[in-house]
Image (tube, rainbow, N blue to C red):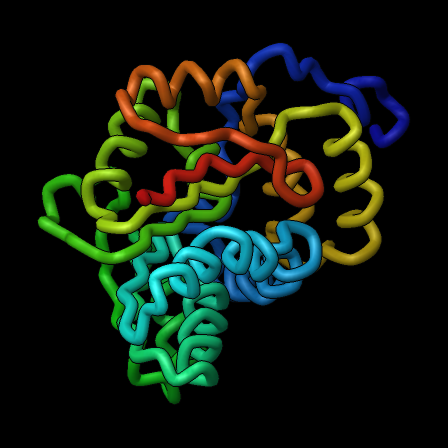
Length: 243
């Protein structure tokens, strides 16, 4: 099977509708936990989320000389990003409130345990597609690897809702749908990540990722003011930091 053309070079002219294994509520919880552990390293070293936040949210906090900040991590998974951000703020003497939102109680169970010693983190269990009705208002909203889980019709509304709930700005970080990214991930994850859903779901995720033209259409449909740039390895970044 690994020598077939479709294994290495699937048709990426469209976003696949294949579902990821971790989105199945009946999926094995131990495999899900293994996957969430993998995400800590993927987010740091491949997605380079710390660099992304330094270049956007943290840079704006420094510009405003902020001493207090609220931060919403949408589809937070294991909450490794929120935990790092909370610790960063505390190390700089910044009072922070971090809200980690996810709809999977198994992921939130893992996240609560991982963040048990960080009092600035709160958890919200709800579908991220419903954030527009929650009445949330935070300084900054952020999401990583969430947009590609959605069908096209939901994306403009989600982007609009994220913009509406963030006072100073938001960052949406997600995958580029590209052959080089798919092949490189297949090679790397085939060696490093075979214990959970990471290998299978990562390949599906890239096939559910985006081209620049698609993201531009979503932003235009959402009616928001945002820039779209390349970010990290095989990623796009939709950014709106308000002056």
